Image (cartoon, rainbow, N blue to C red):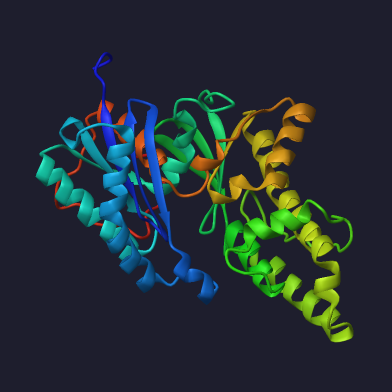
Amino acid sequence: MKNETIYILAIESSCDDTSAAVLSNKKVLSNVTATQKIHEEYGGVVPELASRAHQQNIVPVVHQALNKANIDKKLVSAIAFTRGPGLMGSLLVGTSFAKSLSLGLNVPLIEVNHMQAHILAHFIEGQPDGTPEFPFLAMTISGGHTQIVLVRDYFDMEILGETLDDAVGEAYDKSAKILGLPYPGGPLVDKYAQEGNPKAFPFPKPKVGDLNFSFSGLKTNILYFVQRETAKNPDFVQENLKDICASIQKTIIIILMDKLKKAVEQTGITQIAIGGGVSANSGIRNALKIAEKNRGWKTYIPKFEYCTDNAAMIGIVGHLKYQQHNFVKQDVSAKPRYVLSSK
């Protein structure tokens, strides 16, 4: 098995990105993603439109991934796919296609937990910071999740803390919407924050016990703040946009870093890895690098292309499961609420 070249064709369709990748062992040969622009005019992902777009995109995306990898589909060792968590309609498209392709090529089928994939993306060959050693702490931050996970081994994970309401990515996007920025607004908040004063407008930080998070109160505070200030000055947001974004960003980073510091104190583990779409945020990346220098942590930040939803991270889990002969049968079904566990 050690000398065998394993070719994994991976499919990711948990939300609004249709992605396919081909991996040769831990090396990514191709990683193709089709984004759905239609949701921009609605200010958020519309599930029904997302699933229809997946149906249109999945065949050409898989075809393109195979072409870019320059391998024939007959060489594929197994098909890996996102089983969940995610939007049911979107997951159904990827799951159904993967099952059919597995049947057609007569190769094994591998189901993948999307959040586990964000964590294990660090084991894709060619990461700038190398790969973390077990055990390490993973902070998964995305539009749908905010978690601190103790990772003992590839498939031995324990959630130490998670959001009790909204995820950090949602807090970014909703704050951007309040400020009148187009969807997806999170990257725009990050962009403007880099040119603003983070101390301009202090926002209260939620008081949540243990290692859990809460962002709904912050969202509400930002809304009331903007309403109050624009009542006094209709041009307030336009005149102070960069400072508001910088202040929001600072507050969110403090919330995340405070919990991460607490997790390190409780576990004694100083190897930290981040994953998920929000891990592309420049402010969070900088905060981690500063903590690495000041606190003696070793931090692992994935390449940008492996932060947002992508099939390469599904493929690396597929590779690791293939080595264990951890396959599923054709009766497997999509699981929109797929809780990350140690199994």
